[in-house]
Image (cartoon, helix red, strand yellow):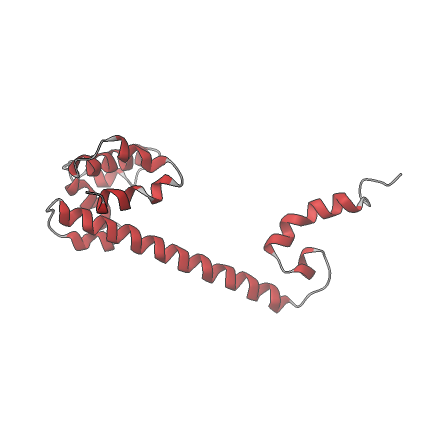
Length: 150
């Protein structure tokens, strides 16, 4: 009977997550060139950065289109990180100081949802579209729907 440490199936199952994230030799404990690991991590960071920039552009463009369709002045504020919360408060006809509450921990979840509900109502959509912003994958669809749906 094999011991727990030397069981090859157990070793393979424990090494699987490492094999996904690291090049083969490093994942299985063999000696590897450290430059290869850094190159892999750099490539992963580069791909993540490109994805993050694409999401930011999508969100800013959607918010700017929403501002234009609701005839809210200064739609270009959608491209500035903190000013876009101010723009959302203007679009949703909420008190302007609400965007400051988006920086208070725990309270920010409630007020960001309320801002999105206000944006949805300003676009004459049901308010539950603003609540959908808390659903992980759907929150990527909500800004686009509010911006480009008729």
